[in-house]
Image 1 (tube, rainbow, N blue to C red):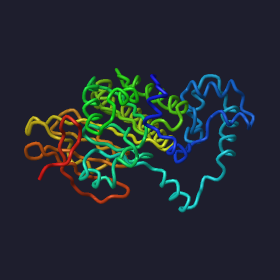
Image 2: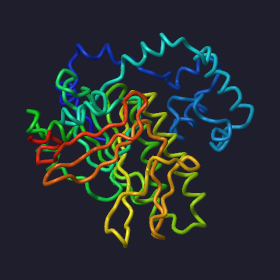
Image 3: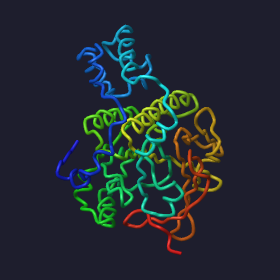
Image 4: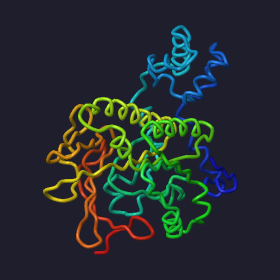
Length: 340
Protein backbone atom coordinates (compact mmCIF):
# COMPACT_ATOMS: atom_id res chain seq x y z
CA UNK A 1 0.00 0.00 0.00
CA UNK A 2 1.28 3.44 -0.91
CA UNK A 3 2.47 5.61 1.93
CA UNK A 4 3.81 9.17 1.66
CA UNK A 5 5.21 10.55 4.91
CA UNK A 6 5.17 14.08 3.50
CA UNK A 7 1.48 13.75 2.66
CA UNK A 8 0.71 12.30 6.07
CA UNK A 9 2.44 15.19 7.81
CA UNK A 10 0.16 17.64 6.03
CA UNK A 11 -2.93 15.75 7.18
CA UNK A 12 -1.81 14.82 10.68
CA UNK A 13 -0.41 17.88 12.48
CA UNK A 14 2.01 17.11 15.32
CA UNK A 15 -0.28 18.70 17.94
CA UNK A 16 -2.95 16.04 17.30
CA UNK A 17 -0.80 12.94 17.70
CA UNK A 18 -0.98 12.75 21.50
CA UNK A 19 -4.77 12.52 21.52
CA UNK A 20 -4.75 9.29 19.46
CA UNK A 21 -3.19 6.74 21.81
CA UNK A 22 -3.67 3.10 20.76
CA UNK A 23 -6.82 1.32 21.98
CA UNK A 24 -5.17 -2.07 21.77
CA UNK A 25 -2.20 -4.14 22.93
CA UNK A 26 0.29 -5.00 20.20
CA UNK A 27 0.64 -8.73 19.61
CA UNK A 28 4.45 -8.51 20.01
CA UNK A 29 4.00 -7.63 23.67
CA UNK A 30 2.81 -11.15 24.56
CA UNK A 31 6.42 -12.26 24.01
CA UNK A 32 7.12 -10.86 27.49
CA UNK A 33 4.75 -13.52 28.86
CA UNK A 34 6.55 -16.50 27.36
CA UNK A 35 5.04 -16.67 23.87
CA UNK A 36 7.63 -17.52 21.23
CA UNK A 37 8.45 -15.34 18.23
CA UNK A 38 7.50 -18.14 15.83
CA UNK A 39 4.01 -18.44 17.32
CA UNK A 40 3.56 -14.66 17.25
CA UNK A 41 4.47 -14.70 13.56
CA UNK A 42 1.81 -17.37 12.93
CA UNK A 43 -0.77 -15.10 14.58
CA UNK A 44 0.31 -12.16 12.42
CA UNK A 45 0.08 -14.21 9.24
CA UNK A 46 -3.50 -15.03 10.24
CA UNK A 47 -4.24 -11.31 10.55
CA UNK A 48 -4.18 -11.25 14.35
CA UNK A 49 -1.95 -8.32 15.26
CA UNK A 50 -4.14 -7.33 18.22
CA UNK A 51 -7.34 -8.46 19.92
CA UNK A 52 -6.39 -11.98 21.02
CA UNK A 53 -9.13 -11.98 23.67
CA UNK A 54 -11.65 -11.02 20.96
CA UNK A 55 -10.75 -14.21 19.08
CA UNK A 56 -12.29 -17.50 20.16
CA UNK A 57 -10.22 -20.54 21.04
CA UNK A 58 -11.86 -22.37 18.14
CA UNK A 59 -10.65 -19.73 15.68
CA UNK A 60 -7.10 -19.79 17.08
CA UNK A 61 -6.95 -23.58 16.77
CA UNK A 62 -7.57 -23.21 13.02
CA UNK A 63 -4.22 -21.47 12.66
CA UNK A 64 -1.69 -23.96 11.35
CA UNK A 65 0.98 -24.84 13.90
CA UNK A 66 -0.92 -23.79 17.04
CA UNK A 67 -1.76 -26.66 19.38
CA UNK A 68 -4.43 -26.48 22.08
CA UNK A 69 -1.71 -26.06 24.72
CA UNK A 70 -0.17 -23.14 22.83
CA UNK A 71 -3.57 -21.51 22.32
CA UNK A 72 -4.35 -21.74 26.03
CA UNK A 73 -0.99 -20.16 26.82
CA UNK A 74 -1.59 -17.34 24.32
CA UNK A 75 -5.05 -16.61 25.73
CA UNK A 76 -3.66 -16.64 29.27
CA UNK A 77 -0.87 -14.19 28.31
CA UNK A 78 -3.39 -11.82 26.71
CA UNK A 79 -5.62 -11.98 29.81
CA UNK A 80 -2.71 -11.07 32.09
CA UNK A 81 -1.83 -8.07 29.95
CA UNK A 82 -5.36 -6.68 29.88
CA UNK A 83 -6.19 -7.38 33.51
CA UNK A 84 -9.84 -7.39 34.63
CA UNK A 85 -12.53 -7.52 31.97
CA UNK A 86 -14.58 -4.93 33.85
CA UNK A 87 -13.94 -1.20 34.08
CA UNK A 88 -16.02 1.58 35.62
CA UNK A 89 -18.56 3.55 33.61
CA UNK A 90 -16.33 6.57 34.22
CA UNK A 91 -13.49 4.82 32.40
CA UNK A 92 -15.85 4.05 29.52
CA UNK A 93 -16.82 7.72 29.41
CA UNK A 94 -13.15 8.75 29.23
CA UNK A 95 -12.55 6.26 26.42
CA UNK A 96 -15.57 7.63 24.51
CA UNK A 97 -14.02 11.09 24.59
CA UNK A 98 -11.47 9.79 22.05
CA UNK A 99 -14.19 9.08 19.48
CA UNK A 100 -13.99 11.17 16.29
CA UNK A 101 -17.11 12.36 14.48
CA UNK A 102 -16.55 12.65 10.73
CA UNK A 103 -18.72 15.23 8.99
CA UNK A 104 -20.81 14.08 6.03
CA UNK A 105 -20.62 17.57 4.50
CA UNK A 106 -24.23 18.34 5.40
CA UNK A 107 -25.04 20.08 8.70
CA UNK A 108 -28.55 18.61 8.70
CA UNK A 109 -27.29 15.07 8.17
CA UNK A 110 -24.54 15.55 10.76
CA UNK A 111 -27.16 16.68 13.31
CA UNK A 112 -29.21 13.56 12.57
CA UNK A 113 -26.12 11.44 13.35
CA UNK A 114 -25.20 13.35 16.50
CA UNK A 115 -22.28 15.17 14.91
CA UNK A 116 -21.28 12.88 12.06
CA UNK A 117 -20.11 9.33 11.35
CA UNK A 118 -18.49 8.04 14.54
CA UNK A 119 -15.29 6.07 14.96
CA UNK A 120 -15.27 2.95 17.16
CA UNK A 121 -18.62 2.21 15.53
CA UNK A 122 -20.25 0.82 12.41
CA UNK A 123 -22.71 2.75 10.26
CA UNK A 124 -24.85 1.16 7.58
CA UNK A 125 -26.55 3.14 4.83
CA UNK A 126 -27.69 3.09 1.23
CA UNK A 127 -25.46 5.86 -0.06
CA UNK A 128 -22.00 7.27 -0.61
CA UNK A 129 -19.28 8.63 1.61
CA UNK A 130 -16.81 11.48 1.65
CA UNK A 131 -13.22 11.77 2.80
CA UNK A 132 -12.14 11.69 6.48
CA UNK A 133 -8.98 13.73 5.91
CA UNK A 134 -10.14 17.19 7.02
CA UNK A 135 -8.71 18.62 10.25
CA UNK A 136 -10.79 17.92 13.37
CA UNK A 137 -11.84 21.57 13.68
CA UNK A 138 -13.36 21.36 10.18
CA UNK A 139 -15.35 18.23 10.89
CA UNK A 140 -12.73 15.69 9.83
CA UNK A 141 -10.61 13.19 11.74
CA UNK A 142 -7.07 13.97 10.58
CA UNK A 143 -6.63 10.53 9.09
CA UNK A 144 -6.45 8.30 6.06
CA UNK A 145 -9.28 6.25 4.56
CA UNK A 146 -9.54 2.70 3.23
CA UNK A 147 -12.09 1.73 0.59
CA UNK A 148 -13.11 -1.83 -0.31
CA UNK A 149 -14.86 -1.71 -3.67
CA UNK A 150 -17.02 -4.75 -4.41
CA UNK A 151 -18.81 -3.40 -7.50
CA UNK A 152 -16.14 -1.44 -9.37
CA UNK A 153 -17.74 1.94 -8.61
CA UNK A 154 -14.85 3.82 -6.98
CA UNK A 155 -13.99 6.94 -9.00
CA UNK A 156 -10.92 9.09 -8.17
CA UNK A 157 -12.45 12.07 -9.98
CA UNK A 158 -15.22 12.24 -7.36
CA UNK A 159 -12.57 12.35 -4.64
CA UNK A 160 -10.78 15.19 -6.44
CA UNK A 161 -14.02 17.21 -6.61
CA UNK A 162 -14.73 16.66 -2.90
CA UNK A 163 -11.17 17.61 -1.97
CA UNK A 164 -11.38 20.85 -3.97
CA UNK A 165 -14.64 21.75 -2.25
CA UNK A 166 -12.93 21.61 1.15
CA UNK A 167 -9.74 23.31 0.05
CA UNK A 168 -7.55 20.20 0.14
CA UNK A 169 -4.90 19.19 -2.38
CA UNK A 170 -6.64 16.49 -4.49
CA UNK A 171 -3.44 14.54 -5.12
CA UNK A 172 -2.53 14.45 -1.43
CA UNK A 173 -6.05 13.27 -0.62
CA UNK A 174 -5.85 10.48 -3.21
CA UNK A 175 -2.46 9.39 -1.84
CA UNK A 176 -4.08 9.00 1.58
CA UNK A 177 -6.88 6.73 0.42
CA UNK A 178 -6.09 3.05 -0.14
CA UNK A 179 -8.46 1.18 -2.44
CA UNK A 180 -8.88 -2.54 -3.05
CA UNK A 181 -11.21 -4.25 -5.51
CA UNK A 182 -12.85 -7.37 -4.05
CA UNK A 183 -13.92 -10.05 -6.52
CA UNK A 184 -15.72 -12.55 -4.28
CA UNK A 185 -16.84 -12.79 -0.65
CA UNK A 186 -13.74 -14.77 0.41
CA UNK A 187 -11.50 -12.14 -1.19
CA UNK A 188 -13.51 -9.46 0.62
CA UNK A 189 -12.75 -11.14 3.96
CA UNK A 190 -9.06 -11.49 3.04
CA UNK A 191 -8.88 -7.74 2.33
CA UNK A 192 -10.44 -6.93 5.71
CA UNK A 193 -7.84 -9.15 7.39
CA UNK A 194 -5.11 -7.40 5.39
CA UNK A 195 -6.44 -4.03 6.57
CA UNK A 196 -6.15 -5.09 10.21
CA UNK A 197 -2.46 -5.94 9.67
CA UNK A 198 -1.91 -2.65 7.85
CA UNK A 199 -3.59 -0.64 10.62
CA UNK A 200 -1.32 -2.30 13.18
CA UNK A 201 1.73 -1.22 11.15
CA UNK A 202 0.41 2.29 10.43
CA UNK A 203 -0.63 3.10 13.99
CA UNK A 204 -3.21 5.91 14.34
CA UNK A 205 -3.06 6.78 10.63
CA UNK A 206 -6.54 5.64 9.58
CA UNK A 207 -9.95 6.91 10.65
CA UNK A 208 -12.40 5.55 8.05
CA UNK A 209 -13.10 2.23 6.34
CA UNK A 210 -15.74 2.05 3.60
CA UNK A 211 -17.13 -1.24 2.27
CA UNK A 212 -19.20 -0.55 -0.84
CA UNK A 213 -21.22 -2.66 -0.78
CA UNK A 214 -21.23 -5.21 2.03
CA UNK A 215 -23.75 -7.61 0.42
CA UNK A 216 -23.09 -7.49 -3.34
CA UNK A 217 -20.59 -10.37 -3.51
CA UNK A 218 -22.50 -12.49 -0.98
CA UNK A 219 -25.55 -12.30 -3.21
CA UNK A 220 -23.47 -13.57 -6.13
CA UNK A 221 -21.64 -16.31 -4.22
CA UNK A 222 -24.64 -17.69 -2.31
CA UNK A 223 -27.94 -18.16 -4.10
CA UNK A 224 -31.17 -19.84 -3.10
CA UNK A 225 -32.62 -20.74 0.27
CA UNK A 226 -30.33 -23.75 0.65
CA UNK A 227 -27.28 -21.51 1.05
CA UNK A 228 -28.82 -18.84 3.28
CA UNK A 229 -27.52 -20.32 6.54
CA UNK A 230 -23.93 -20.53 5.26
CA UNK A 231 -24.17 -17.00 3.83
CA UNK A 232 -25.43 -15.57 7.12
CA UNK A 233 -22.72 -17.35 9.11
CA UNK A 234 -19.92 -15.99 6.90
CA UNK A 235 -21.48 -12.54 6.91
CA UNK A 236 -21.63 -12.59 10.70
CA UNK A 237 -17.93 -13.49 10.87
CA UNK A 238 -17.07 -10.60 8.53
CA UNK A 239 -19.16 -8.08 10.46
CA UNK A 240 -17.70 -9.24 13.75
CA UNK A 241 -14.23 -8.69 12.34
CA UNK A 242 -15.15 -5.17 11.23
CA UNK A 243 -16.52 -4.32 14.67
CA UNK A 244 -13.26 -5.45 16.28
CA UNK A 245 -11.27 -3.30 13.85
CA UNK A 246 -13.43 -0.25 14.60
CA UNK A 247 -12.92 -0.60 18.35
CA UNK A 248 -9.24 -1.55 18.31
CA UNK A 249 -8.06 1.13 15.89
CA UNK A 250 -10.63 3.86 16.59
CA UNK A 251 -11.87 3.94 13.00
CA UNK A 252 -15.34 4.51 11.58
CA UNK A 253 -16.78 1.64 9.53
CA UNK A 254 -19.20 2.78 6.85
CA UNK A 255 -21.17 0.14 4.94
CA UNK A 256 -23.48 0.48 1.98
CA UNK A 257 -26.12 -2.15 1.41
CA UNK A 258 -28.35 -3.52 -1.32
CA UNK A 259 -31.81 -2.73 -2.64
CA UNK A 260 -34.40 -5.29 -3.64
CA UNK A 261 -36.40 -5.35 -6.87
CA UNK A 262 -40.17 -5.35 -6.48
CA UNK A 263 -41.99 -6.28 -9.75
CA UNK A 264 -45.15 -4.67 -8.44
CA UNK A 265 -43.68 -1.31 -7.49
CA UNK A 266 -40.39 -1.01 -9.34
CA UNK A 267 -37.23 -0.38 -7.35
CA UNK A 268 -37.73 -0.28 -3.60
CA UNK A 269 -35.77 -0.77 -0.42
CA UNK A 270 -36.11 -3.98 1.57
CA UNK A 271 -39.39 -4.31 3.39
CA UNK A 272 -39.39 -2.76 6.86
CA UNK A 273 -35.67 -2.91 7.72
CA UNK A 274 -36.49 -2.27 11.39
CA UNK A 275 -37.47 -5.87 12.23
CA UNK A 276 -34.45 -8.06 13.00
CA UNK A 277 -34.91 -11.78 12.43
CA UNK A 278 -32.17 -14.16 13.60
CA UNK A 279 -29.55 -11.39 13.72
CA UNK A 280 -30.45 -10.04 10.27
CA UNK A 281 -33.52 -8.80 8.50
CA UNK A 282 -34.38 -11.28 5.78
CA UNK A 283 -36.80 -9.61 3.39
CA UNK A 284 -38.82 -11.64 0.94
CA UNK A 285 -40.22 -8.98 -1.32
CA UNK A 286 -42.99 -10.52 -3.38
CA UNK A 287 -41.04 -13.73 -3.97
CA UNK A 288 -37.93 -11.91 -5.25
CA UNK A 289 -34.47 -12.97 -4.05
CA UNK A 290 -34.23 -12.21 -0.29
CA UNK A 291 -31.81 -9.51 0.79
CA UNK A 292 -30.13 -9.19 4.18
CA UNK A 293 -30.38 -5.84 5.89
CA UNK A 294 -27.80 -5.71 8.65
CA UNK A 295 -28.82 -5.00 12.21
CA UNK A 296 -25.40 -5.55 13.74
CA UNK A 297 -24.52 -1.97 12.78
CA UNK A 298 -24.46 0.58 15.58
CA UNK A 299 -26.19 3.14 13.36
CA UNK A 300 -28.55 2.42 10.48
CA UNK A 301 -29.63 4.96 7.88
CA UNK A 302 -32.43 4.41 5.39
CA UNK A 303 -31.99 6.69 2.36
CA UNK A 304 -34.62 7.61 -0.19
CA UNK A 305 -35.20 10.09 -2.99
CA UNK A 306 -37.13 13.24 -2.14
CA UNK A 307 -38.48 15.97 -4.39
CA UNK A 308 -36.19 17.22 -7.13
CA UNK A 309 -32.57 16.99 -5.96
CA UNK A 310 -33.57 16.42 -2.33
CA UNK A 311 -32.72 13.14 -0.63
CA UNK A 312 -33.99 12.01 2.74
CA UNK A 313 -32.07 10.04 5.37
CA UNK A 314 -34.06 8.34 8.11
CA UNK A 315 -32.24 7.21 11.24
CA UNK A 316 -33.69 3.86 12.28
CA UNK A 317 -31.23 2.57 14.85
CA UNK A 318 -28.71 4.49 16.93
CA UNK A 319 -27.26 3.97 20.43
CA UNK A 320 -27.41 7.68 21.27
CA UNK A 321 -29.76 9.49 18.86
CA UNK A 322 -33.58 9.36 18.49
CA UNK A 323 -35.31 8.15 15.34
CA UNK A 324 -35.59 11.11 12.99
CA UNK A 325 -35.12 12.34 9.41
CA UNK A 326 -32.90 14.85 7.61
CA UNK A 327 -32.80 16.20 4.07
CA UNK A 328 -29.63 16.55 2.03
CA UNK A 329 -28.47 16.66 -1.57
CA UNK A 330 -25.49 15.39 -3.56
CA UNK A 331 -23.51 17.49 -6.03
CA UNK A 332 -20.08 17.16 -7.62
CA UNK A 333 -18.46 18.20 -4.32
CA UNK A 334 -20.19 15.50 -2.27
CA UNK A 335 -23.02 15.68 0.26
CA UNK A 336 -24.48 19.16 0.85
CA UNK A 337 -27.38 20.79 2.65
CA UNK A 338 -30.63 21.25 0.77
CA UNK A 339 -31.28 24.83 -0.34
CA UNK A 340 -34.59 25.91 1.17
